Length: 488
Image (cartoon, rainbow, N blue to C red; front, top):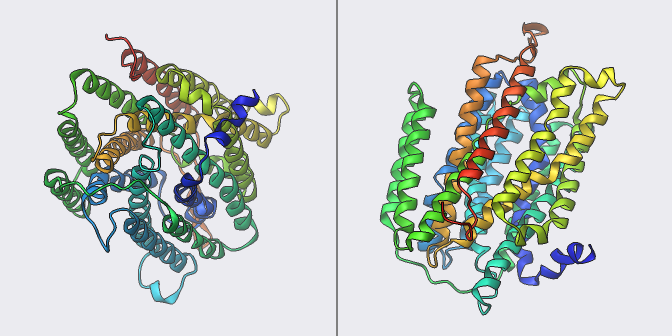
């Protein structure tokens, strides 16, 4: 047991720390999460379907990561093809935060614009900033390893770095999620957004001191870069002109583009490796494409169960802390065990841990004399580590197959595929919210214009939990993503 607990400490190297600080900055984005959720619920006239649809659009910058991957691999700015892009990302994150400060504080310099339009634009700008930094950080995870080791040792170190990066994210969520929620309960929301300007400074501090194995820029893959740019332009035109079924069109086209570009990237590999890569891609896509309930679940928790900012902060703290501890304890398990079997185990456990929320909707906690907050706290504590572990497993698969000289593009394209899967999840969630219409109470000048309605939440929870269990299990059983799995 002691050996398991000491695994992350023994694996940590000083050369990892600046990279981990960039991941910590990404995780710190949850600092404003609770304040933003409550402010959106109170101030913006966006329905559950609108917010789910916005979430789909916000996955698009992650979908076109191949553009940023090509820049990182091939385009040098101011003598750098790594660090400079972290600086650019930090500027975009800061700009997004300043715009949000403007509308939350109702400042005169932005008063001529609707809150909804500024919120959407600021959200997109912020996401682009985080995407750019994420591409660089993912690429650098393969460049801080000790390249003098054997191939097997390098693979284990790659997995270890993925674990440590998730630990850094978990630590950020543990500390910053709790701190931001508590401050949102004490101070006004504008103050919380102002304080969040520390986030881009963290990533800048990390990239200033990080040391990487020297990697020469590779020739520009014009097919990937300009194909990605044309796709981005296509997305903007489709979205701006409000084309019917625009999100579905963008999803289908983006999936086709990314699969085509991935195929061109791996075509020089041997047939067995290509087969395992494709199996891994199927599992990763399906695992991440499962639908969610949407924002109405949190609205119900606020309106019916009476959860406030401070309590959500406690949930964030517990969730982040337990996730951190779970990732710490499972580090050796993740590195050494079968990825397919672990994903099945995680699917089963995650399904079981979804049931307490369903039970609370049917007032089972009331019949048993248990407070809703106690159920939520216990459920959050138990469920927290599993999403992080699944993420590490997927990133480990991606890192193992990263082709030399094309790692930035590889990580970007695989991340694009993973985020297209999130788009699929968002679309499925949107359709479910169309069928099961859930609304929060909306008032205008003190008059209720939209009453709260959570009547269909129970059925929606049943469907989401059922689909999220059956589909991944069947897919993982059919397409074992482990590099050493038997041929089917």
